[in-house]
Amino acid sequence: MPRGRATVDGTLIGSHLAPTFQCAWDIPEDAISGGATFMRESARLNLHTPSVDMDVHLDTKFPPFEVVLQARTQQEAEQAAMPIIEGLAIDCSLHGCVRCCSPVDVSPFLRRAVRSPRFG
Image (cartoon, rainbow, N blue to C red):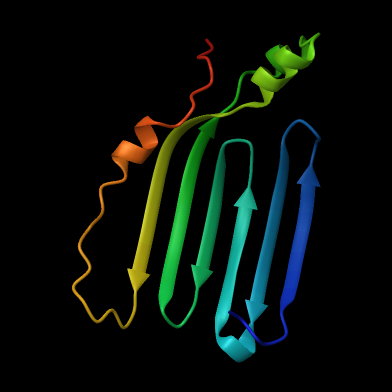
């Protein structure tokens, strides 16, 4: 659990239909830092600590803007706001692992994920 002072910077730029949100955090006393960028087409997260370095990239696809603008009901708006996850890349390094760390197959967890309806 971090104990030091933290600094956080964030920005939100772009239109309401396609914003870009960026944030970065740093806790120098505990050597913890990271950041996140969320865009319409992807999300990136990173975390750096003395024991873990992790970078995550998530590729997403949203319905075209025309579909979003034509939503007339709450259900249509929710469907238009749900992205389809098209790709996921995780790079994680554990430092100081006492036991041998073997790769973990996460595909069974991903198969159970709720999928939104496909669109053209």
